[in-house]
Amino acid sequence: MKLLLIKYKSVIRFIVTFLGVYAILSVGYHIYLNASDGSIYYPDYLTHLVANQTNDVLNSLSYTTEILPHPDEASLKIIINGKYVARVIEGCNAISVIILFLSFIIAFAGKFKSTLLFGLAGSIIIYVFNLIRIVILSIGLYHYPWRKEILHTVIFPMLIYGTVFILWMVWVNRFSKQLHSNA
Figure (cartoon, rainbow, N blue to C red):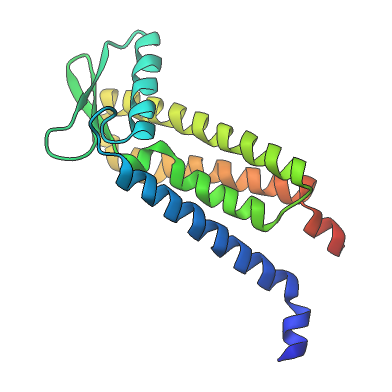
């Protein structure tokens, strides 16, 4: 058993670090969500921010758009030219995807500075890509509402998680000291 632990030390360290960081960030995010009472920013600040930025981008693309609180759930409705096309819920703000991304980056850490900078840059890329995803999804749902299932459940999740995967591969192959120290 001891030989197995020694042989797979780096794998075990990765798994424990990944799960630990993921748990800490997830609990922190859960505390943030529970502290958000929705009185100023509905349903919470980050979701509200994403919805407002989506609204701004759609309006800049010549769509008459407004964002309204959903009367039956903690979300914001995206309305384009008077037509309700989508809702922005807490899961649409990309924070859970960023937590997953950061957990991997930290678990497969490189030098402190490169880990910090890549984590920050990757989080920004994921956030911006997610915002663009919501904008394109809203336009797609406005013009092609019958394509809702494939757009929302297949194409756009594949794109956001594909982006995360590409960032992970860049990290592992270019910056992570674990891969390069074991080679």
